[in-house]
Amino acid sequence: MTKRILKVFLLFIGLFLLLLAINSFRNSRLSIFTSFGFGPGVQDFTKNLIGGYELLRNSAHEVFIAPADGWNSEVAIIPSKVLKVNTYKEFIIAERQGLKRRNPKDSLNGYEIPDEKVKDYWILNTDKNYVLKNLKITDLQKKLESLKIPTDIELIDVYKY
Image (cartoon, rainbow, N blue to C red; front, top):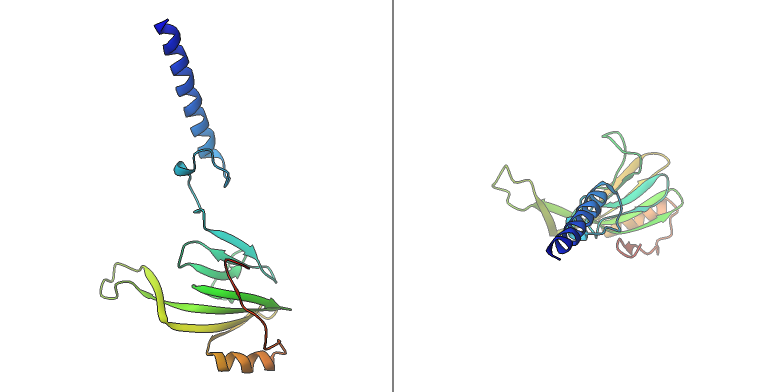
């Protein structure tokens, strides 16, 4: 009787380890053991925009817009932290909150947190690879008019877009 219980126990341990091994090799959001998951967090996402660009969320404060196939210093992007976004033809319009170093006196700690005092607007032209950045709301309205983008365009929260 005890040998049979031991065999059943070892069978269940073996199945558990097998499922754990399979789970570690899978690259899926539907994880068998979510607490053992690796990779992006539950709240991280990528959303397609226009012109090959994506809205990417890698962490709570790292929400930015960049090309899906990668980028370098020559490619226009909208850096973190994007709060709201919308598109019109070849343009991506975004509201952005600035970031500041959590501890400016510690040169080894580069972690950034939102700066409630800094909020600006960006317009990225995906066809011509340029970005108008750090615009105030009045400047944004003028640029929208000059680019023939409707001035009443609604910027949508990144979590609802």
